[in-house]
Image (cartoon, rainbow, N blue to C red; front, side, top):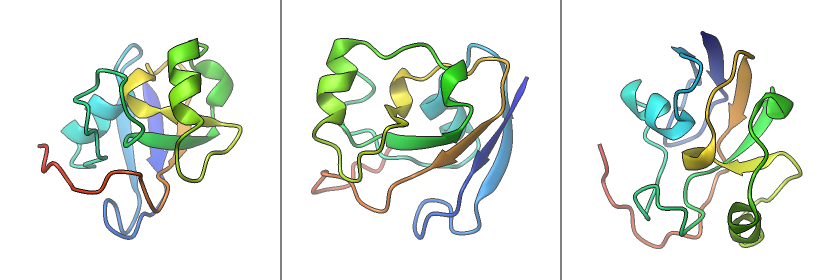
Length: 113
């Protein structure tokens, strides 16, 4: 089990949050189960960048990204060296600290729950 610390985000998680996820859990889906509604316009099909997050701690515990994810991230707003698509991250046995960028390239929110 890993502790996931989500840093405050003005809309999605104003006070920040700490949740527990099991090893192998998908980061995006796990955060959604805890009420942290990160955008995901492509429904987790690895076709957009709306679920872009920056892993501030624990980045090296995640599987290496593939070329498709890397190419998509090149278009993400606020790209950093430790950026990932949260729909492509699977929790390992290390705690993570996650920053959700202030903006996405998505022009309309989908209202996923």
